[in-house]
Image (cartoon, rainbow, N blue to C red):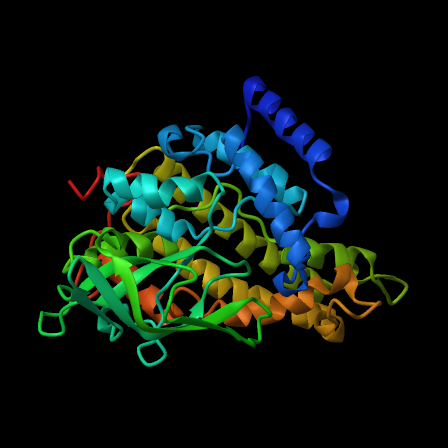
Length: 407
């Protein structure tokens, strides 16, 4: 059975256009390293400027509407763009897609112009703001307070694991607006400017070598137009945020470089007068890794196809999320079994296979068990979606399935 994606002549022509643009416009020494912390500030700002150029072509966020700075293109266009930029090690955007989707669904027209448009045009970057130190993944138990002060709000609280590898100008997430209201009716979702008076940001030194931060807010003042949705509607708004984070949009071009490089390693490594790939045990481990990687690609692409075709997504994104977390960890174990100590040689080691990429991925795979909520929470959500839990739930609205919720 052929699971390959066939492209039309017109689509292949578009691919040549994308490939040609990359060759002409991207400096080889500015292509991003595997470990995000190895990227320099010069690289970051180089790409911030390139992303503005991409936005003008409609390639930064190709499927978002043109009137807000998107490309107005199809999912097929996005797939081709993703493919070619991934092959070139070229990042195609730094903003959190979860916040973009939330603004698209819940923002008023004025808020879309104020917050969404500069993100889609590459003029600003956003982080998502979720995890509290004491609450972990229990977003419904938020303790950070938002207190009304005239037409403004004063925000006080702290979060951890905020941001990604880049700096940002705004961030979005919930705050407790009414401690006396019932759970799920006591939150508001706010956009917060960076920097702001009373906002302190500190870098976290984490195993995965990604740039994450702890933030501390002490009466950070935001105007009323920074509240997305109603002041008791934050749980419903953050539902869209979490739907995308948990795989609800799928992936246009998922890939598994760890498995590709594992195969390269076993083909090239000499062993017992032949290659490592001739060992039957290694063959079995490699085939297990290939099978799991292909399943994950199919699950993510299926969800992306459904999302772009505005089909109702029920459990599909969550299935991809759970499988990706667990298969990624299993494949990291297979890499260790096959490569042995070579899997732990980092980017600074001259004899590290593939520039030390596998060592970085070993740490990253462990961290993904907890990123975007724990794997246990992901399993609970999946159980609710497929009807085997005591409670059931439907997918939250996304830009694919909802009209504007603020009207």
